[in-house]
Length: 221
Ligand SMILES: [Zn+2]
Image (cartoon, rainbow, N blue to C red):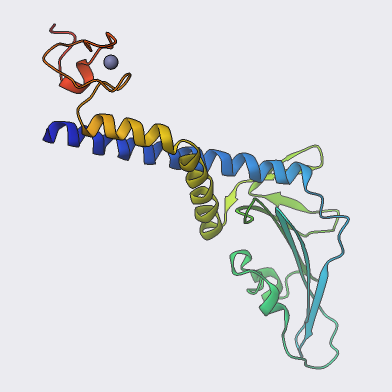
């Protein structure tokens, strides 16, 4: 019987691995579906601004189910210091709270970056556009097809949550099948009909081949 239990555990491990792969694949499909069909242009962004002696930092935040878009801009307009609020708004995964080296050294006249994240339940894949909203903008970590950007840079915590969500949903849908198969492995029964396995290489009830379960080398047989 330990062999049957070992096979049952192996079946469970394989199933969990398959569900994880399925969860990841569905996550990518859903994120790209959101990239194509969720339109954030129609929504108005939340705007937060801070000014200091050095710079004005403006952040625009668009949010919709399946999409988040963050535009971070730094430029010289000094209105006197205020409390820096954008740092509270900018998601950590963008790293937009850290100025680019070009802006830091004043090699560029302004800084403008746009992060576009897609996915559901949480945005899990994102692309970044440098020099956003200008004629010289360039997209990184995404494939631009027509006017749609398919992102592929992972937001790891959200990606794990989404993958787990879809894997769990898949597992829940297939639970009756998985449980039945696991029990048949565990109880050393035919996988097709559930009849106890005897000495024969074939199920005496339904004729199903039992080589894998009894550990019979079919090539040597
Ligand atoms: Zn059978």
